[in-house]
Image 1: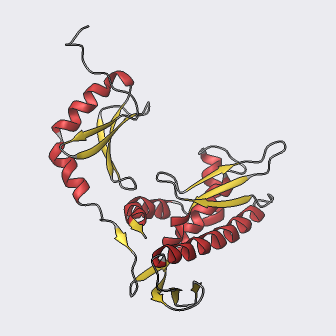
Image 2: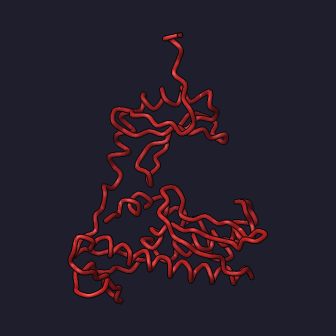
Image 3: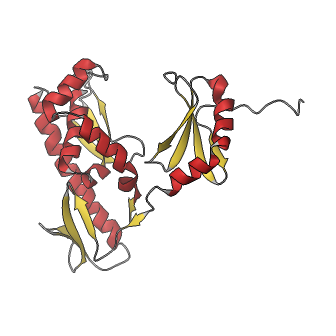
Length: 239
């Protein structure tokens, strides 16, 4: 056994760099070793162009330990919803209230009975609104593309705002969204719906795909920028 053999690393390995989470990633498009902040997962990603250079990425991460700590410290902390607070859904503020009866959403408030499950019930109302709104926008954009409306579902992925499975023999198209899109402005959520519907025709991110996105929802750039800037805030909201 060679005790001096260097440690081997693999794509997806996670490191602890002075108490901070760092994930290793191989990206064939990368030209050099680099670090980036994954705001949605509250971690730093160390990128390497090939698996052989992951060792360099690990060393670079340790060299930049202070920078990593500073970046992660600047991310928003967990935001727990509570009575008396406010939650924005598609850009509109809703008061968070305690009230008798079934959980409900009015034009101005989200209301649930005062029990241990209050916050979970409030989030269920938000998720219900997410499903309804995203289903409506999906139907709208699919119709604009002259495509049947795909099935729509919501989940809570950490790295994607939506995914599309185009129709194939014996299986209709299906789109799945992050429910947290309802926490974004209406135009941003609508852009994601347009983006996923564009995949009903173009299963790639080529020029024709982006032309479809712009046709459906205008310039994608500001919406993509908003999601990058606010991803951590959206993922920080919890019961």
